[in-house]
Structure formats: structure tokens, C-alpha cells
Figure 1 (cartoon, rainbow, N blue to C red):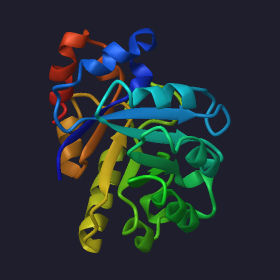
Figure 2: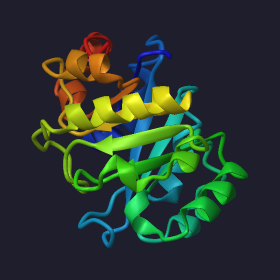
Figure 3: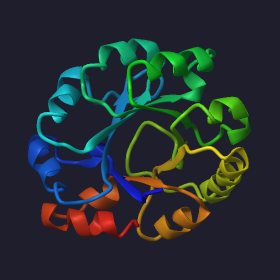
Amino acid sequence: MDKIVSPSLLACDFLNLGAELKAFDNVEDLWFHIDVMDAHFVPNLTFGHPVVKKLQTVTKKKLDAHFMVTDPTFFADNFKDCGIHNFSFHWEATNHHDRLISYLKDLYPSVGIALNPSTPIEAIPDYLLSRVDLVLLMSVNPGFGGQKFIESTVEKTKSLNQKREKLQANFQIQIDGGVTNKNAMTLRDAGANNLVAGSYIFKGQPSEYQQLADSLR
């Protein structure tokens, strides 16, 4: 699989959002990660439909939306015209995982399951792992950017990678939270294909974004 880097737009300069995205035009294997929060599932409120819909007008990169919300079905309907490539919902937000996955697959090219740090990978039945396109392991507690990486995520990644190989499944393993060049290679070696980074990339100037993104491969 490709070594994808997904800059988290939660950390970018909102007043210059279009220019921030343009700085990545020449970067290969890059998605833009969009954290949608509802101030209920997590104690924060972020991007709404009007902002996300505009993103597809200023970039050709894939939009990777992580929905930290209590009602994923509502948001799936509300955001279906935004050009989103991957829709990740939280395992903890619903009791009807199979039904929700089927519904999302009719609306989005890629469907992912996100797990909080305290949720074990064993919570997801094997047959659902074989149905999804991505599993997002939170390496910080969801809700805010700039948190410290939870070290046990490395072993969790290894376990999920072993399960993926056993099932001969093709889902991506995405890591989100506290990712920097200090832990990126360890996570890649553990089996991660897709690394989300916000503060680490956007701490630099736009001219440095490509170099910082590539340092995570």
C-alpha cells in the first residue's frame, strides 16, 4: 500500500484555508484530514457543511473526513454532496455498525471505523474488518489537537496489522494524534499506511509543508 500522509486541517490557518491547501498541490499520496465534531460526542465544535463543501473547489486531493459525532447517519446525509472520499465514523457512536457501513458505502467511495484509545481492536468483528476500507486508531483522546501521543498505540497497530494479514484484508490502518517524525517510522514499521498530522506539519511555513509531510514517510 502507498504511504499516505493526511495533514489535519484542524491545525491550519483558517483565515487562509485556500492558500494552505494549495501549498500541497505537488505532494503525492496525500489526503486532507477533516475533523468534524459536534460538541456532543466530543467537547468541541469544528467544521460545518458549508466549509467542507468549499474544500473540493480548491483542491483535487482526497478529502478524508473523521466524524466525531453522536449521529453519524445524520452527518452522512448532510455531507454527501461535499466530495468526501473517506467517511470515518466512531465505533463508540452507534450500536448498528453493519447497517451503518452498508448505508455509508452507498454514499462514499471509502468507509472507515475510528476507535478511541480505550477501545480494543477486538471490539470489531472480523467480518466487519473485511468490509471496511480503513481503520482509524486514535493515538490521543479525540476532541482537541496538539495532544501527546499515546505510546501503547504502537502495539495496538501491530495487533491490527497482524489481524489484517490473517484475514487477508485490504483496509488501511490510519493513526491520528501526536504523529511526528519521531514516531512516524515506528508506526510505519508496525503496519500503519496512513498518518494524520496536524500540529507537526502546520507549525511550519507553507514553503515547508511538503518537506514536513514527506518526513512522515
